[in-house]
Image (cartoon, rainbow, N blue to C red):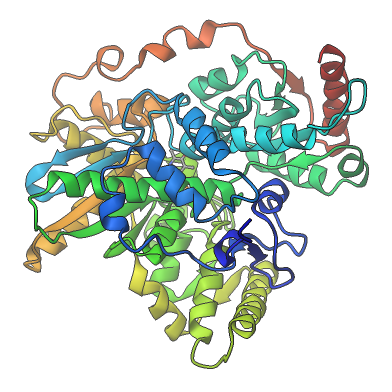
Length: 545
Ligand SMILES: *Cc1c(COP(=O)(O)O)cnc(C)c1O
């Protein structure tokens, strides 16, 4: 068999280790030197990909992209195809990630990523990751005899809403895998709470923890390094730093590119910009991989809400855990805190996946000085290490102008306030021909940024520029912001007839909140307490298995 290519082996960004298999990268999640896994090289598609990939279905294209990063020694082609097909069979739209042109005259297209089971973009990755975990575990258990102990994976995660439900739907009913999701009691939206707790599969465990999201996250971190628990149980994570999540998200950049190309006149040479509502930098990082693989993307636009660490980086070359922007003034939150915005899935202090981009920036900046590939990678790892140490110790990392300029070849950034988010939802609802197109607040952050860029592009006389704005959630999931924008409570531009029940709420949400639920309350965000619950529940589950 062919041995894995460089793009099918993985290394840690912190420079400590090389040569990991895809399976190890996915199951470990985080490297033991605390770095993130990245492929040893970014692959190029086959020479005539522009032609051969152009008319592929989402699933076939996904297979092509994924197999560049996963050796057939690890997952045979037919198994990978089957995993992909099964992962996307749960989507409601036949295109999986359809492209909707909402302003044809302005070449504004919305890439709808919310047609999976939990109505948010995380499904695109987590439906695949769930099947992947099961695949690895079942394979490990192939030779385990009746009565012998089976390999088992216990996935533990904390959620403020979106990740939890997508992880639960990705892992429900999977063999040899159990999942525990901690959410802060009473602090996730009723719809999100119901989405998680109405899943009754035996391997799914919701823990409603009295405390905040940060408390839950701290408990999860402590559990992963808990000496007893990590010895007695095989723990897994599905948080946004898992390489398999990034990988699965590369696919829709290629797919939407071809979708749009097929709709444009033959011979047209469009300029493509992707605008991505960003929190932990996973989604837009997948776009970076697509671009480096050769997809002709002019720019990737990072759209942040008022938690704007990334936008500040691009303006100042300082990656800084600082809290409030000047215009928020004294009414802002306490120094060091996350600001609660209308787009909560993007409320972050630092973006965990940004470490991966920083590694590439360090790497590209080393090119003139290093002579061979190993040396360059090692240098990149040690520079990255310095940056991350500084961030950890002082809350700040400053990069040189050269490094920032390397980043600016691929990215620009835009910051969008809550007010602009609400105005954008209202504006798009009112504007023909998009009239009555309803954006969720995260997607609205992207569209607000897109509208700014379109204006600037038109003023500069650019032609044939297309903005593809990623839509990360269905509006019914974040109806608070949508109601705020469209029922006129917040004043501003007058709104046409709006009816949540008729226009927004999907069939699947009907009666969701009154269905049977399964959830355990944990009265304190205490590591020992949660560990006991986890162990106890796993024992019960084992009895039933
Ligand atoms: C997670 C999430 C985001 C942010 O994506 P990142 O990959 O963390 O940048 C944006 N919108 C929604 C609805 C999400 O759930």
